[in-house]
Length: 301
Image 1 (cartoon, rainbow, N blue to C red):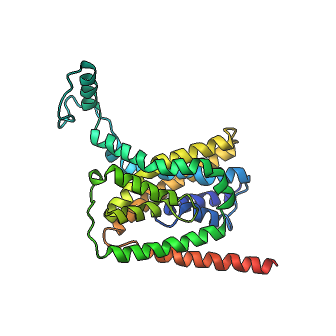
Image 2: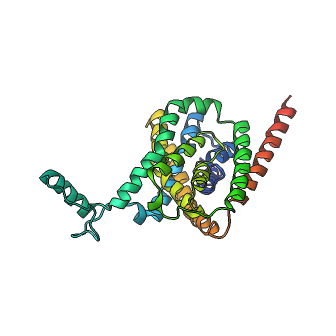
């Protein structure tokens, strides 16, 4: 591969790192960028690359939020009693004692909520993965979703101005709330929707603060993207060439570094601003996509 091919990989990593966390659709952007920046790789590899590159972005969440997510500790005594009552059964009492000394139970509960949020997308997305890849990964679906959810962000933020957030901490998210947010995540199976955008909208509608909605959607990305990447790797097969491995690693490393910056930017931005700017960006981009591809089809006749 020459210098320009590697430059393309870096650009794709930057696009992924920025768009994975901002509610503007990473998959949609990668599909559109592919129109102008094409790697000299097979279609099967690029289909896998556009998903697996997201692992780099996910690792940024793991690094930034490690203390909030890591559920294990090795303290001699827990900071506070985990169980209000120790069981009379010796086996159950032993399990309770073990969990008290080695697990942060609030973080275990958080992971259970994350799993609940991921179930709807898993149940619907797994059997429809190939169909969606064949029928929905195109510019007209992406442009339509960019515009629809751009309008949705503006309308929801206008509605949200008259409300006060009632859920401001992770502990306040119930399992019912987690399931509702998970239902919104299903919408992101359509390219151009934005996984983070869909779950943020769901969070805001049930009463979470903007910061909490964004933070929770970061956490949901961990199992979702690891699962999606695993499926794509299995479908592609593990017979990578040396160049293909290098392309994946460079793309993921760039996505990781850019994601660190993008996450910090977003969390700082929404402390003082709403999501309307992302709504307008989506609408403008969606219109530009329609104009570009419409003109392309017109002149191709």
